[in-house]
Length: 104
Image (tube, rainbow, N blue to C red; front, side, top):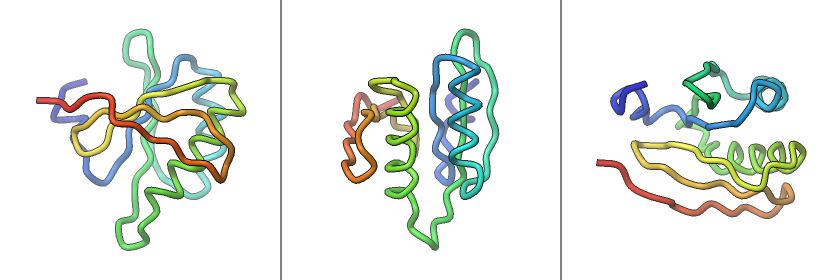
């Protein structure tokens, strides 16, 4: 996967450790967010397409937090607008997003 492929401003790319995590993550997100998943070496990538006119990034991240809490994953990485962030597992009403590093 190239940096250009990761720089999708209308998509959020999540990095998950196993195929089983991907299946449960996608089952929770797919009813509302269209996307795809793929394996890239030893990690799994899952995208969720944003609908900018509906301002649903915060809602997507809250839902992702709840799912990773259910999966017992303490933190996952996600990419948005060519930046990499960490998303901590929290209760559905408690969002915690931290910027881990900026690319390029």
